[in-house]
Image (cartoon, rainbow, N blue to C red):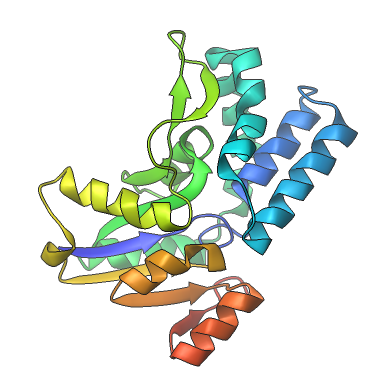
Length: 222
């Protein structure tokens, strides 16, 4: 197997889909604009700084989904895809994914954003295999605010890829070549695990490490 792993936000997308979804719920009137924007921006800064408590953030971010229910949330997300995500998808990012698929690589999106937000985005890129933060849900299908299993965040991305491989009866030893594209220092554990780390639209700290270690640097959105 040859694996091509992709982070999503600021890697394949020129925006943060989780942050954008939060702002979209404000526009829907689901949250108070000032209170939510202040908290959402603070969480985003913590993410960039590498200090985010992912469990606290998930409780915050999925609260509107439980309040408004599955059907209303799904309908809102379809509007989010049409108004925010699809206009942001750049052909150069789609072409990068397609090149790996055409080469016979198994493409997987590995993201720290939750599966509700990201599964339709992965589908828009033509990628069936998604590793995202799985949400615990109640009997009605509404998120409880808790994370199901290991969050695909920082070291958890390595764990989740290993679980994904194990579910197919495989391990890293069965992977002939692996690449991982990411913009964030948060993804250093998985970048260090793969054969070919690619710092993609990297933040300053990841850019410095990539330069020091001789990793490939790819700026998709110049």
